[in-house]
Image (cartoon, rainbow, N blue to C red; front, side, top):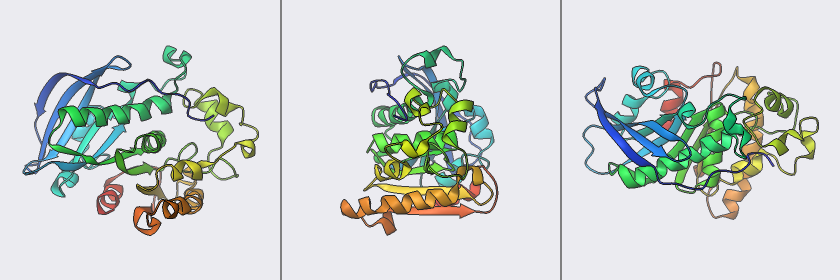
Length: 288
């Protein structure tokens, strides 16, 4: 009804590897070109603690930047060095290498839509880690993304139980925020401005989101009994932070039902400021 279908799973093939210069001795960087029939070649940044003696836990995500921009902006968007110093790796790819964020793209004449394709890519990154990246522990992986990619991270965590932690950052409508209500971005607005993001059936609820047979607390509940961290900013009312808290409260009984303590497995993080993901968020991710 909402996210639509996804392609079949497919193990990425490695086409090339290249070591990158590191901005910090605590960090090693390499880029690998992975390929699937659904996406073609995709550059994947693999960031690792330089002195790790055994496989490390890692954050897996899609971002808005190329590999070169990600390395250049290590303090701005992906805190590669901070994570490495605390014993974590990262595996990151640019989302538009997976599927174009353009409503007129020919790709979206197919049954797949953007959020679903980006979420599918999270799982293909896990497949690649399991097969090609022995420095990372595949049983300790977190899915993380911001804004529209927070929606994709949430869907990836819903679909793929290999993610032991899911972090949808400021994911808003179609992510962790309720579809019902009058706060933040509406179902009608998101489907009008971004018609390629969600399934066509979701558009039938534009005028009457109250007729949806579910709301986003059901999406959050799909993460249980694994860990979930919702992150937001006080001035980002478009993402409806209060609504996300309410959705999580409504979902938490499922953690209890499955024998997990929601007080330990779920959390929210709210900081002053606007819509962005920065070093402040990364400190919260790493602490959690």
